Image (cartoon, rainbow, N blue to C red; front, side, top):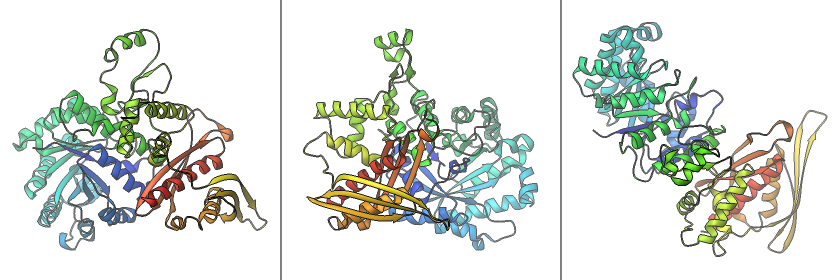
Amino acid sequence: MTFQVYDTTLRDGAQREGLSYSVVDKLAVARLLDDFGVGFIEGGWPGAVPKDTEFFRRARTELDLKHAVLVAFGATRKAGVAVATDPQVRGLLDAQTPAIALVAKADLRHVERALRTTPAENLAMIRDTVTHLVGEGRRVFVDGEHFFDGWRHDPAYTAAVVETALAAGAERVVLCDTNGGMLPSRVTAAIAELTAKLGVDPELFGMHAQNDTACAVANTIAAVEAGVRHVQGTANGYGERPGNADIFAVVANLQLKLGLPVLPEGCLEQMVRVSHAIAEIANIAPDTHQAYAGAAAFAHKAGLHASAIKVDPLLYNHVDPSVVGNDMRILVTEMAGRASVELKSRELGVDLAGHPEALSRVTSRVKELEAGGWSFEAADASFELLVRSELPDRAVPRPFALESYRVIVEHREDGAVVSEATVKIRVRGERVIATAEGNGPVNALDEALRVGLARHYPELRDFELADYKVRILEGSHGTGAVTRVLVETAGAGRDWTTVGVHPNVVEASWHALVDALTYGLDRARV
């Protein structure tokens, strides 16, 4: 039976405190997860969450997934309601995804106290909903919510939930450690007992682990060693409370430690790029000490380690860092590896393999910029402009030259706050002065720049600022801190992201805005 890697970053991962994805964010994250090669992407709960309904609507035309199947998440029919008339079930079908995940109560206590229905009706709800959705041509996964707690309380009833779901046509029944309280040995024991009780192959089961005991990844690996062939997790372990199993660590362990080829060829090396890009979209600082994907995952200080590494890097690295797209670091120096720069450049359509001097310059420049707080993991457009600037025949010309800009923020007597920006630029030999107002200094600056460029570049009317994120850089403090700005721009049916860094947030935004317009205008000419 095929091994399944199932990601729930956009649904379960989005429950992390302080995290909120826009629809544009969700589409961007889905593309990144597909680059990583996961088999399934759970997009959210259509019908119940308006943002998720909109995501699935847009996904039908805006997502061209190469590896993943999109999954809609929802619940079984309500107690006492016919499945064909349940609006929540109808919403799942309306999402038009090939697969659907259903949450079902697997703990008798939750059936009686939370659902407030009978054990028999809960089983009927599972059977009816799975049968109905399978009959509509959908692949169905059933998440046995609170499975492990239910198994310890009343194994006979919890087994009946699993058996009912499988008999109704569920492709996999996912054993959920919803409260996150399990340990690896107990996971293994429960799966062995369930398999023996039902007389079925454990390959029919999946594993979903929360991280309340800091064992989510270990519990997932234990489930696989017990025969499970479907694993769930979230990017960087995002999720409610302490989070979920980190899908990156789970996959790396399966592929590199257990020898299970769970991702398509060439996808594992995308891990660091995808991990960091999703962190930027979530506006959460990447965990530098995250296993496999963290900047410190393969970092070594001077002394004994460094001496041994000079002889053989694998003496102090448990795997070759490059297999997950990471770099080994010596001392505290950030290493921007030539291989990763070359790989990313090729992905963006700029092959540096035949330009070793340019590759060296780009690598050095990236290293220098990253030391100053720049990050290109989620800013492909800025990175592409940087790479192409080192190739004379591929460099992107700037659409204007800046003479100066000025931004004023006025707090009026009536309480209104108005921002006004003036830009002085040279466009195709012409000196242009343009002024505009906005709802903030960055918006005003963006508007003024567009006004100044509009006559020469009418394509700009199709561009719009889709998202804007600001983050204080690690190690910076107070109002004098260095900030990093990410600007996402949409136009001509695509989105692109640019980055700017400066102690002044307006100047950082200016860098990102200029890159955004430069990249967009270049693409508009293609």
